[in-house]
Structure formats: structure tokens, C-alpha cells
Image 1: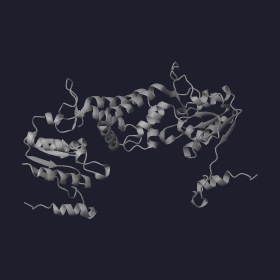
Image 2 (image 1 turned 60 degrees about the vertical axis):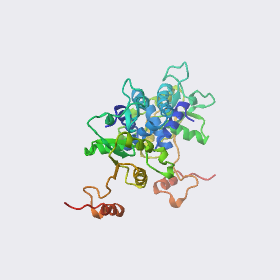
Image 3 (image 1 turned 45 degrees about the horizontal axis):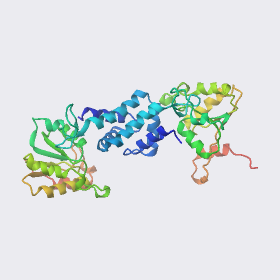
Image 4 (image 1 turned 90 degrees about the vertical axis):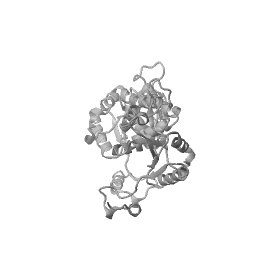
Length: 206
Length: 206
């Protein structure tokens, strides 16, 4: 019913995660009404990201290709940072998790991004993740500790267990971030799973 | 925290209607992971729409600029269709409403898209709508009937009342689509406003 370019745009928007047909239509008409420079800024941002951003060849974080680099052959800013502890690797699911860990200012090692978590329902197994690349790094980079920082949910926990079973054979310490009550939380409102984990992970007071 | 092109893309996506910061991040990483040709198809669809689509100079429906046309000077497919009744105008809020009316196959006249409805809370007054252009058409095109087909909600009704007050001075019949129970509906589940409108709009049985 719509002119072909409009329908094409609605279709392409509808392929994005979390965008249904109604939202796709709403966004398409928003872009139609928007000044050309605003809409083209989005179009340009998409092509720029595909052109300039690739995965860090070491840790699979997002990495901006520096001019002169071959795309996909560059390292991310964190891997390039010489002041970082190169013997500790924090394993996360997605690049956004690196941002969360960095905000704590508690961690000075490197990262490894799995680019997902094991999720049989959605067909994501270890082969779809950057697991092989992690194992290769342990020896090549003389890693001493792997901190498994996947999400504390079913998929993240399953991934952590799987990684632990693989890493057990290697001369490396494997740790998992603690689950428990959030700081400022309230026992009364904690769900029983979290409280159970908090009890399980109890520590002796000094 | 993210490389500049990634952050730019997240920012641009976050400006779209109904896309919060979390969705913008999710979509950005989806595009990062997607094959280049998929992401570039979206980028291309946006620029193509801005390049090829403009508003019909008569009815303000979306209109594909035919090759050779000056952008913004072309008419939409419906206005160009000679078999249409040129003396009846159906006034709608948005181009998508034309699609809804066309699906009924009950209407063979032309349209006029207001590109919104009066909404004082969002700062949309008659001056932001294509009202002046509608008034100009009545005389220029010898319009006989204006069917006000704005949504049956507060904004659409206010817009309809406003248009009726303006059109009263002109030699044209002004009608409003009926509000009432949906076909296949049930009295028991109808809200009282709709039922009230249905009673108000009752017709004599032939």
C-alpha cells in the first residue's frame, strides 16, 4: 500500500530486535517527517559503525579500526593499554558488560567477550561463543586467573559451569563473581534464590 | 566508554520514538553483530526514503518522486488516479490512516492528510497541521463533501470540531465518520462512551 521505499524502510526497521510492525511504522513515519539531516545522521552512523568498528582480535570487545589498520586485525583500547594487568582475564558475555565492570574501577586486568551465553532454547551452544579463543589465550598469554563474570542467570550460570569444566584441565585459577544481596538492599524484599546464594557465599568476618 | 562510532549510533537510535537508552544499546549491538549487508540495507533504506519520498503537494500523503520530477512538486498515486472522485475529500491525521480507509474499498474520493491532530499538551495547534492547505483546496478543486476521518479520540474529535467550525463558512458538506460498537462487538463489553456514541448516532431502520 505504501510507496516502495517507505515499505522497504518499515520492513528493515521491523527486523531490528524489539521492534514490532507497529513501532517500525511509527519510526518510519518519524524519519519521513524528520529533517533530512537528522535522518541521514542515523543512516550515516549505521554505515560508519559497520566501516570503522570490528571485534578486537584478542578479546572480541568492540574495537575502532585505527587509520592504517586492516579491519579485524586491530586490538581494542583496553588490550592496547600497557598499564593493564595482562595475566588476569575477566570473561563477560557482551561488550556492554565491560562498560559495567569498568565503572566499578575495581578491575585492572584484561577482558574476554564471549559474545553471548549458552542458551539451548535459542540455539546458542559453545560453538557460537568465543570459547575456543579464550582457551587459546590461557597458554599464549600466560593467564594466571580467569574471572567468570557472566550474568547470574540461568544462561550465564550454565556458561560459567561449562567454562569451569574446560578450564579445570589448565594451570589457571578460575573464579566466579559473587551472587548475593545488592548493596543497600533489604532482607525482607530479597527473593529466596538471591538470599540462598548470599547465604551460600557467606564469608567470615575479620 | 564505547568507541565513538558505537556511542554515536546508540545516541542516534535513542532519538527515535519509543526507543529508550537500553533498546538503543541493544539495537546498536545487534547491528554490530549483523552481517554488513543487512545493516547497510537499513542505512540505505533510510537515505533512499529521504531522497525519494516527499509529501504529495495536493494532499500531503507520502509520495514517491518520479524520475524527472522536482522533489516536493509531485502528486501521490491517489491524487494522480483519474478514476477517483475529485469532489470528495476524506480528511485523515496520518498517511497510515489512508491505508486503513483504502482497505475498506468503500471510498473512491481523494484524501487530505493533516499530518497530526490538535494536541495542546504536545504543543500541536492548527498552525502545525495542514489546515490552511485544506481550506485552499475546497474552492480551488470545487470540493462538494469533506469527510472528517480523524481518530475518534480527544485529539481527533477536537480537530474535527475545529475543522467543522472553519468549513461552516464555505459551500461544502462536512460529515464525520460514525462512532459506535465495532461490528461483531458485544453490548455487555462496550465501554459507556462508545455505547453512548452508538445511541446518539442511531439510525432509523428502513
